[in-house]
Length: 113
Length: 112
Image 1 (cartoon, helix red, strand yellow):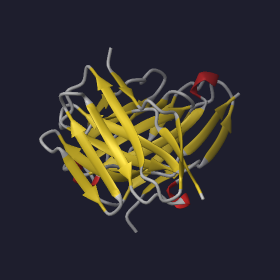
Image 2 (tube, each protein chain N blue to C red; image 1 turned 180 degrees about the vertical axis):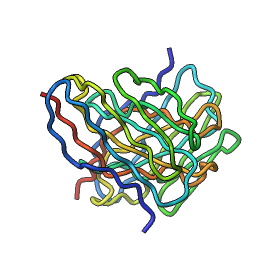
Image 3 (spheres, rainbow over the protein chains, first blue to last red; image 1 turned 90 degrees about the vertical axis):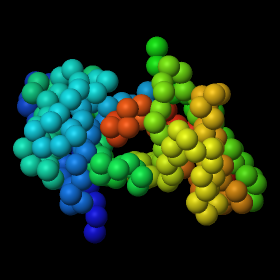
Image 4 (cartoon, chains in turn orange, purple; image 1 turned 90 degrees about the horizontal axis):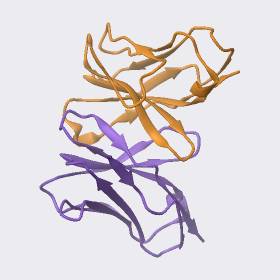
């Protein structure tokens, strides 16, 4: 089944403890992206990647890191999480031609206490 | 500043009627615009894409229009059903590089 897999689905962590949210897609998509979703603010892009080793900042990159060493994986790293990073996170992927839109993962609900 | 506004946060409609959702944008020149459906706690699901040189696109009970002069897209669901109840998001890409910016969504409730 064609899909974007994020792990974990739920995570509660403490301020300052480094964490990684994994994202993997099995569709050979060039394009991958991370979004956070907060009530009233909608989906805001954190980082995106147009291909292996090519990443760029989105609207809200502060406090996050990403890497794209392989085409299928695009992990999101929070080096020192803070409570304002409590949010619902989505990974998405797309082929170069946008005709079929993005495929989103199921989301990771992160709580930083 | 750049804005994507879906000007109804919530919309209630009677089953069988046509639901019309609006997406307006400011200070963007989109290459194309997309519509997604999102159910609570789930990731958005792609519905339709319309390009800047297209006026209208249809898919089953769904219809999207795109007016680059008005800077507006309308999303219609005809013969609405309770199963259509969800949040609908519009998203646009300026560069054609597949970098999407999203509106905050309209929560549609179809009442039986």
